[in-house]
Image (cartoon, rainbow, N blue to C red; front, side):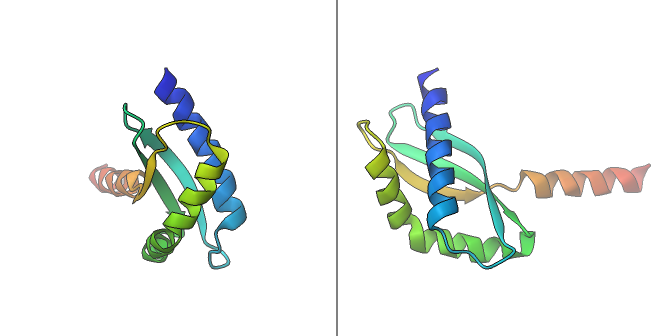
Length: 108
């Protein structure tokens, strides 16, 4: 229950930080698909979906470059100990679902 509330808080704060502070190319959008915080609160993995898909590599590189700034901004808004260390991963659920759907259409 506590982890769920922390994940919701982190999703809200990180969404605000990324919307306000990240500088992406025009027409590139990112969405926080899922937040997964460890039980000891030391690590948080953010799963990001990217639109359009071909900009995934660009977004990954941008997130790597801006990770420390995003983390610092998050830490200034959080009043908890320990502060979780962030990592970003690309959520490929939509791409995998699309592949499965194409395969199923071919079968039927």
